[in-house]
Length: 477
Figure 1: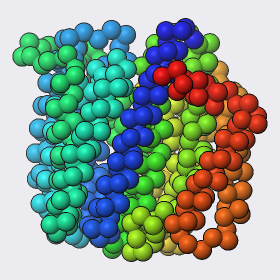
Figure 2 (figure 1 turned 180 degrees about the vertical axis):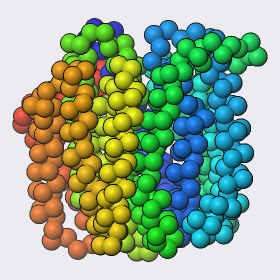
Figure 3 (figure 1 turned 90 degrees about the horizontal axis):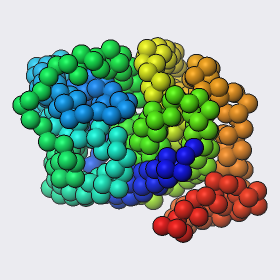
Figure 4 (figure 1 turned 90 degrees about the vertical axis):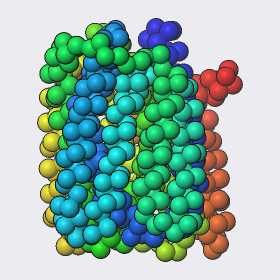
């Protein structure tokens, strides 16, 4: 890897981690306050709408965001054409969803969804004005600017949500939080990005990128469904308070896993696209990122699983106790999300969008089969089966990406397993070392401290390269 690319990648990863870390800390604070003010049913009402919003977002972008990032040198006309295409698609999709709101309310047997869905769906229409700017920022690795904008947006939206929840607006507080966040984020994007839309646009760039973009659109729709399929199924089968417990557990799992996944994902596609013509460099970059993801993800997510019950009780209270066991399971599966992101970006960067599509399609078919097959055993066992499947399906992704990269199964296990085993040993030691503590707050803090000390101690004892590089980079900065 050249020094320039190495520096860009390192800076991108560090700023990406800072961005996600800072945002997740804020999400933690706002999430705790909102969860104490609102009920599981409030979260369930807004949570079941996530799948519709995610599908609509993929339809509005139609894969052109990733197509722009994947171009070697996108021009002003490329950005401008995609901008107006996104606006047009978003207006059409919002109209469809607005008219579909009564059907959505009937499907979930919840009348409150009629108008709250129409309001929440505004978020993806508003977001369409900033999609092209976001592609520009990702393409140019503007992670520092993305960090600042994200933090400011979260501060504004979180404050709005808390004020409305305190004034007893119930689930509307969560809806307004979403709208405020994306509005502020879009304003920030246009402050720092030099791109400005104009009426001088052409369909030629759309036609040129269409095949790749269309395949990515189908794939991303399936991928979005796979992320929220359990919430959708639970929303149909179970009362909203139980759906809210799952939604709460899933939210904290995603909050934690996305800290690493998004940091890796924002850097992976532009960097992998830059080196895709050199198979040897691609493999080196992939292995470096895979080790980095493992170095951070396994201790973070296994640690969350370890303290899931204490975390829920100490932060959002006894009324959410049923979500603690679900969070513990989801966190184990969430530890592999950065690894999935890397595999997916390998496929995208090598223009293998149909391979991406079929792998994601099989993924969602298996998820539906698991949910239906285990539903009679209860929510806990559905989630347990889902986590086992998540672990096993990573090997399917590896099998189909190996011909592209030459990344052998032995090499992947050599990059992943040492960190997984170290994290598992760390959490086991922390569990037994603190098992005599009765107070929940003291137990939470003790397990976090013991786990951190033991993990860093093991890394130093084994002279782990990743720890030394991270410390060296941070000292330099």
